[in-house]
Length: 258
Image (tube, rainbow, N blue to C red; front, top):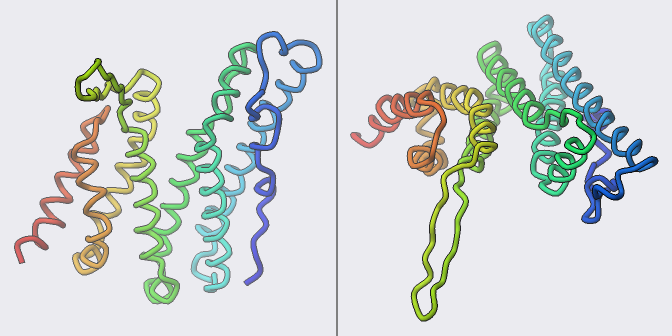
């Protein structure tokens, strides 16, 4: 199958001035630099909107034509969802870019590009597509290893969520005494981001809990450490704990008791 070329994915934002180490300062943000900064923010918003539109079109194409799609067609759609989700995650992983965006948008009084929303929507659509493909055509799904890809996407979603729950650490070393480590609670911004990501994490957990017992068993070894980490993490909603409890009771418990 030929490689899928999704418009806009070939250009990384890490190579533009906005994301550079120097970036913009309050003194620099005048005249031409102001216009450049505003243009870059606007372009990124348009870029995100275009990517979300592409995955919506792909989802609609599958919904309307899924009964007549071949394995090759499904493969192309899968690659589109995968590429855009990976791209969204990459953008959210570029911390320098995010800091520069926050500073520029603050100075220009602009709303920041919706990077978390982009990542959430990309993975939500990717997850839904894999779920539908698995249910609509079990034989083709087995041939294309759709179940494995579904579990991998759930795993990725939970890893992203866990990354967001990581507490900040503070190290203090008094003279001639052991180093003391304190873990600080999540800040307001992190809590807001975590709340935004909760729905997707719950969806991923529900997908895993809905797997047939034999299917869950195949992936239990790779999923168990993630589930344990989720139990010990800070959450902004009780939804995650409820679904986790269900997974341990209905999926993990029977495996342990055998």
